[in-house]
Length: 198
Image 1 (cartoon, one colour):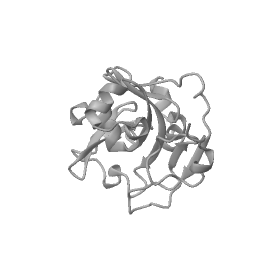
Image 2 (cartoon, helix red, strand yellow):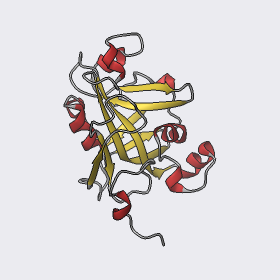
Image 3 (cartoon, one colour):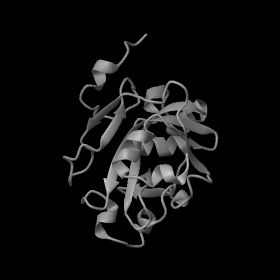
Image 4 (cartoon, one colour):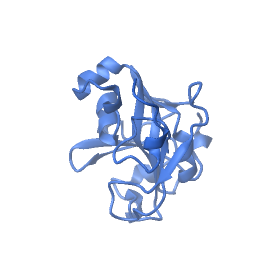
């Protein structure tokens, strides 16, 4: 993973991040759901232009944009495209990979698929907070690593973004088929790709 990976169109990066590994210290998970946001559309924070809050979105690619949602949850985004363009990929869900006991302690839930199945849940599980806003994804402490074996080319389900009211019709949500860790509401067709519970 290098800066050139992020210095591309946000929709392309959002698709290519599915299957990669998001790591913060001793916890990590496979990215199974992303959403793309671009300054050209009103759901993106960068749509209002350069402000004290949004300047990270316009900065160099491969930076973390972490913000508080509704005053409750920290949400993690990876900044993309060339410097001066406001764009980022929201990481919406992970399939837990490492540090599960610590994730359970932080989240207070036992089931693996409930640990990181939402953007606020995964930041709580990985202990990603606002102090990491603007940090370099290539230098840490948050890192996005290449896919592990078996995750190199995951089948993607595509649909509209959720939890927003503006530009909600854009098909910029990307989910890994077959993953129970995708956030609710599940995209159309996901249930058909799930293996039966053992």
